[in-house]
Amino acid sequence: THQARVDGRDFLYEIVANGRNCIDVDKFDYLARDMENLFGGKKGFDCSRLWHYNRVIGNEICYHTSVTGDIYEMFQQRYYMHKQIYNHRKGKAVEYMICDALLLADKELGISSSTESPERFQYMTDHIVKTIECSTSAALGPARAIIRRIRTRHLYEFVDEYLVPADLMNHIPK
Image (cartoon, rainbow, N blue to C red; front, side):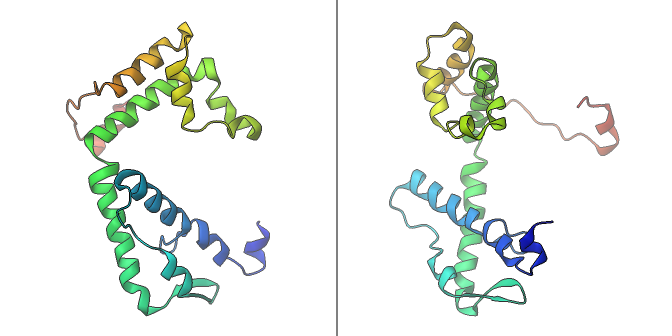
């Protein structure tokens, strides 16, 4: 067991990944980053009031009633981002295409095996897409073609979806 769990400091885990109420710095970070990257200077959720108006009570991070509106705003912004941005059909197409490009480039660039080495993994940033795009390697040709399609907006098209009844799920190969 983790020492923090033993010595009664469970609230420390709530800072990064709060399973109790989902108010954590991970959410603060991705909302701020994505709002800035997508909308520039448009004001997004401001987490600073939550930092100033909280206390640890009974080994849990608790928030003052004066920040209820801020908490509501955070969840409202998260809902908006998931509804309008993260699950947008064009965004999903780009996501699937990047995944396909990375899978095609994996053998040549050792992307998946990099997780076994912190020294190598630290270099697996968004720049990997540019590495594939600028490469002249024939082995990276198919991955490069997918990235070119993204750049020229020749995205995957949504064809159809089908909800499989629960009783037929065991007939679908894993």
